[in-house]
Length: 197
Length: 93
Length: 99
Image 1: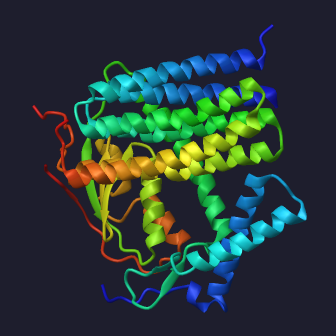
Image 2: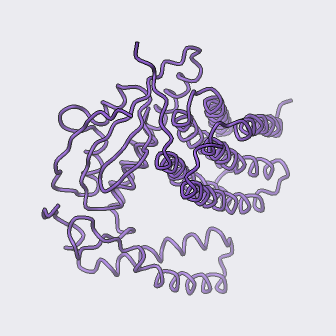
């Protein structure tokens, strides 16, 4: 566990201030969309409220790293362009997953063979774990059952889908993409095994 | 002449049929988690149902706000119920 | 634009219906979650996106897009919460018998 994971965000000049500004901008856009009035009174009330809420929630959204002590990740200072590119790829996968589920449901024989895969993925950023778990649920044939300290338990609907996520050697496509997205430099030990229940 | 209002009525009827099917799963479901799953599907479908009602009544601006509040409350209550049943630890019933 | 909205709404309703049928037809709890977690997310998302296209660009369609983003973030989390609760309280998945 005591490996040095390079943290990209630490080299930025004022990460906390940028994070604060991002929270403020998101909250203010949300206020403007929900209120629907764009005169001075409503906008000023919204600005004051967003400032107060951003100030209160600032320490809550600085998430401590799981591997190195003393470093924090800011939930709102993510690389936006990479995130959008990843989202488009994920959308295509979601459509594929739905067509797969539709074919399974409308097939009278229902060719399913449920299977449980566990694999290990060490990442220092908890937000990356959340993103990976959500993506696993949305992609074809797999849902996340449990995540405990980098240990993923995944329910796959056929064996091939389980293998595609955690193959015998190396690792699947999606963990690599998530690790690239969140600048996780060192990929630690990974293994996969059968679980008999 | 078919207009979009007919489409909205058809979609509302279809969603009501889906909700009745899910109620079968909620009542019959072998475990408590099956019931929770059915409740979650009903909660997500009701968001679309509310917005369709709004388009049918020509008062979308009101119904959209209700749909946002309903969606957020439904999600939170689903997570809390899941935690509660897990703490009770009952797989039967 | 209206034709595109029609296509989005009908395909979204198709996926929602498939999700409901899957929840009825699949043999056990974990496989039912496959149907509800994926089918509902894309089905409701596509339908609401189609309604936003039908309405045209305004504040209301921005709110509809916010609902779509919220569903795409929240629905997998809800599915995962139920699934984890079931796993931790000891529900075992259905397996095909090996003969």
